[in-house]
Length: 214
Image (cartoon, rainbow, N blue to C red; front, side, top):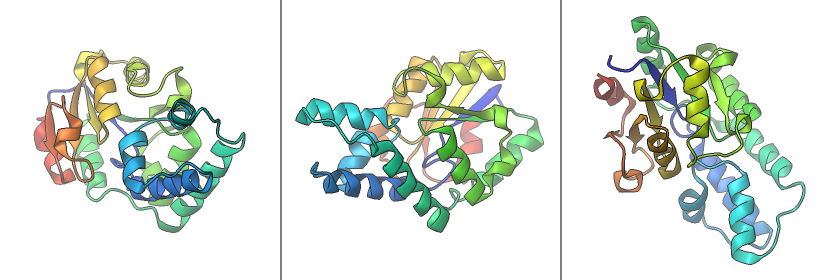
């Protein structure tokens, strides 16, 4: 394998959470008087930290979201995770192969540490990720598309950015990886390749990923 470190996004790449979380987010925003379709949510917020929701709503409407918005949103999302969340098909096979080949990996997500861990416990992925291999937008001042999160992950894991490959399914994530000077591979199971412009390669099934990584 030609990379020293593989950095996985979490939502939509490791856990199949995007349909659940964007259905809940769009419904909650609409409930608060900010009409948002599921497609709007995917376009505007997929791959972003929750502060982007606050920023865009204020920019577009001049209004702020309720003080308990994050708490309520997370409670609704976590409840849905506990009921329905599944790992992305084939991802444990990929992780198993990386372990067998001795290739280090980690996760760098726009979600909070709590969100990551709730999802991993539900899907059994917690067995694959040590605590020190989990990085969140909470750990840096700026979320994706800023490169800070990926650069932090590379630094903490002990590898140069140019020796890392990022696995992403959002345009914000692809932009962040490119800004970090890393190769990035776009997972197109939910997001069309044209929305992941700038990726080094594309795949729509986890079974194709190891071939792309070399």
